[in-house]
Length: 197
Image (cartoon, rainbow, N blue to C red; front, side, top):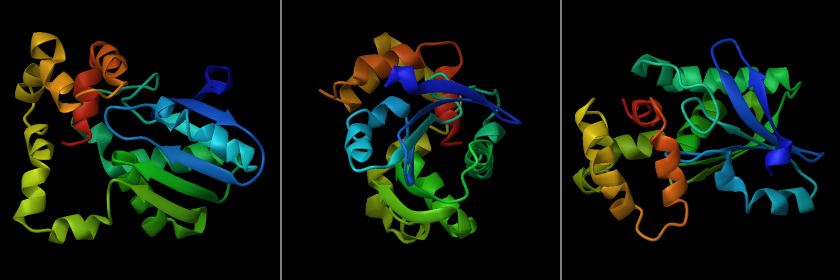
């Protein structure tokens, strides 16, 4: 997978982008605290079916730029990154697949720029208005989305004791050590949490 990764400079950030295959394009968007590597088992299946796969590390994740300041992680800015990426690659319409925050961005692309989307597949996150209308039980299950907004406190709590919180939260998930390694880099934990702010 890594031999098909390159850096693409955009107006605000530089994205680390996995790109492979020929045919109809599937744009794969990860969430927190992942990178394009989330799709390493899905990409070969799409390639076998004749798709071209594009999976960027979204701003603040993986090897992409991590600008300072929470305003740099507003959803409209992240969506603009992806539209600019598609333009840079000469792509007018793509199938969009998103997981977690990637699904939120996928919903935004499909609703605000339907002319760019052939289809939408949202994993783990339903339509934004469904969450907004959800009752307190759903909000209780997503408690961490509020906690992650507490600048400084969230970073301290998540990273203390060698990321014990994240290790417990992601019990047994094979990517945990990779996540911790990436989030331990200067500014990366704050960049990831800025998506919630």
